[in-house]
Structure formats: structure tokens, C-alpha cells
Image 1 (cartoon, rainbow, N blue to C red):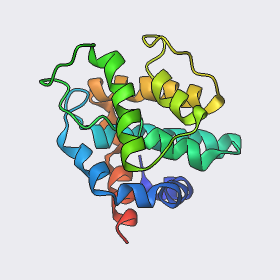
Image 2: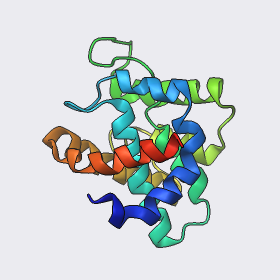
Image 3: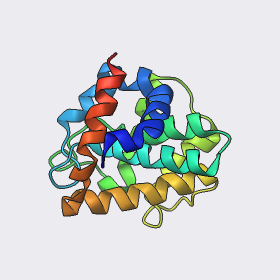
Length: 168
């Protein structure tokens, strides 16, 4: 992806998420391996950026909240390849993400909570209930596939430009 062709989306994404991208706990997501060779931070930015593009192109009213929630959908803050829990990671990590978000950033709305809890649908029991939840669920599946196939690396120049602008 060419950052100059993505300029309007990058600007909007950074406008919505700059404070989150500067947050030390969000930044710590870089240390957790996620899908294949990607890390949780890269994957989350990739997913949220794709959601931002959808929101922009579809003129979605609550775009800022949807994009911010999408960025935090995998805010579980543990190494899931090695750290095991009573439940499988597929079902455990959305609940852990909600718990961490609310502890660090404050209460989520019901719509935001559904976005995160349902983002593993159809593997998750909870069904996405809003357009934002469906966008996150679909973007997450697409980005996860690209992560595992190594195709998400084409997003790297945009990711680096987002990082650069977020630190200005």
C-alpha cells in the first residue's frame, strides 16, 4: 500500500486514535506475538485502519468510537502462544480485552462491548449486533488471514506512516 494514496484515511485514523497510539499499554502490544509473524499491535492497527476506511467510505455516523474500539479489540496483554487459561484463547481474549480496556480507559458502551466480545463470531457465542461490530468482525477475519499468509506486510508502509504521524 502506498501511504500517499492513503493520505485521507491515514489522517482520519490518526485523528481518531492518536492518544491511544501514544498510550504505553497500547504500545506494549508490540511485544506480544499474534498471528504468525505479526504482533498484536500491528494486527490491531491493521484491523482498525481497515474499519476506518469502511466507516469513511460508508459515512458511518459513530466512526470515531467504532475505530477506537477496533484498535483495542485485542487489548488482552498476554502471550497467548505460551500463557494458557481455563478457556481457549478464542473465547478468553475478548473478555480479557474488555476487562483491560475498562480498567485502563474507563467503561465501554454496550455497543463497544459487543464489538469486542463478538469479534470472534462465528466462533464466539455472541453475535455482532451493530454495523460497527460486523465491520470489526469482518475486518478481523480478513486481516488475520493476511497475517498468517504474510500478505499483511503490504500494510507496513501505511503502519509506519501512522506511527510517524501519531508521534508528531
